Image (cartoon, rainbow, N blue to C red; front, side, top):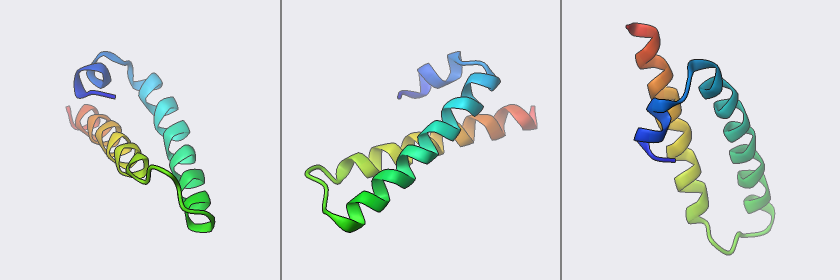
Length: 63
């Protein structure tokens, strides 16, 4: 998810998406620990998307 797409979403949508992505990241991380994933770069991109959304939420709270 790109930064421009994140900026267009409402705060409620961002909170909902953040929860879903964090759960998905945790599940992928656990499954990768048990059996290695074919493409471990998925973890990196998912982690960065979570960070982008969290940063946007923090930025909105401070304004």
